Length: 276
Image (cartoon, rainbow, N blue to C red; front, side):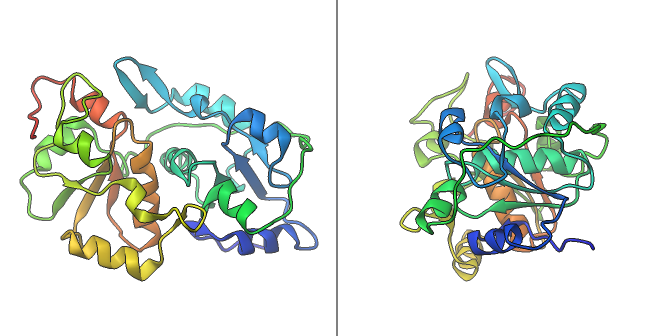
């Protein structure tokens, strides 16, 4: 029986799936919280994944795509197969889990969801917890990053900046966007970028869940964003902006790309302009 999936899943929907008899053998829950927190308590059946294993760093550039072979080993060691239905969550409302999902999409994975609000929402809703580490049956998950339709690099962005239906969405804080907070070789933002702090799409009074669909759509429309545009999301390393990517996907935006390494990459490229 095939599993129907959506980009974002609620705590109730995940609990219902966990209560299905028999439990789907394809369901695999990935925990990207702190390892110490995972050991203390996690969603029943969840497998821990260290965020450091899904990104590659070459300081000052951080947050690049991982090496395909290394990523393949990571997935195989977790027992993930191309048939797995992945539900990913973290302890920050979705940045780490969303980055994992975006990387999986590039690897060609089809079935996955982000747990809305992550562990904060699960705890808030008083859902069941476990401290048992599940047995893992190692798999074989070959990885190649051949389909880069959801990836934008600095040259791609530069070539499209002045096109009418192209938009760059900066999900960093306002102080990073304006250059007041300098965290890379240069301060500021990509020329013409629109700023929407990733925290603004979450409801921190509701366990860091995404804000309601209509509220998000109104927010995006107010910024001049439409589903007819090609939108590239970025932050400092494509961590915060990965959540924006998944949120846009869940809202039906069809043409979204993420910029791995993001501002940490753009800032070191002297041939790329900066706006403050």
